[in-house]
Image 1 (cartoon, rainbow, N blue to C red):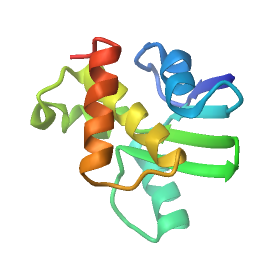
Image 2 (cartoon, helix red, strand yellow):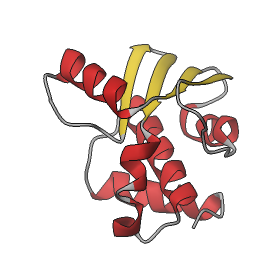
Image 3 (cartoon, rainbow, N blue to C red):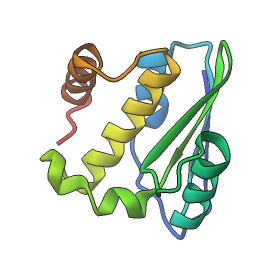
Image 4 (cartoon, one colour):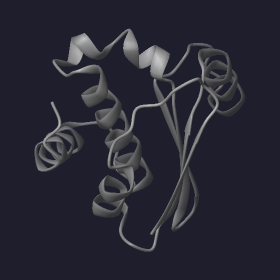
Length: 125
């Protein structure tokens, strides 16, 4: 398991990203996690999905065992209260959400259950 974390913003939330990714994606997955600002997040979303809004998280599988996740913390800072989580907990939730997409899961009840179980497993609130 290899997890590379980069940030293009002034700060990023420190969490056990590698451990969470290993639980979801397995030990042989190479993951890049990048924290970006709103301008870059919007540009990536526009270029890759033809969507014009600022996303909180984007995930892209690059190969069977390689992927990348982009998190926009400033977008997440505007939303975390709606999810009954702390700001740090919401960042963890977004990371888990992105990992589950890389694993091949789609939005729905099964994904929501898995997210909640993983939040509990890592004591995230």
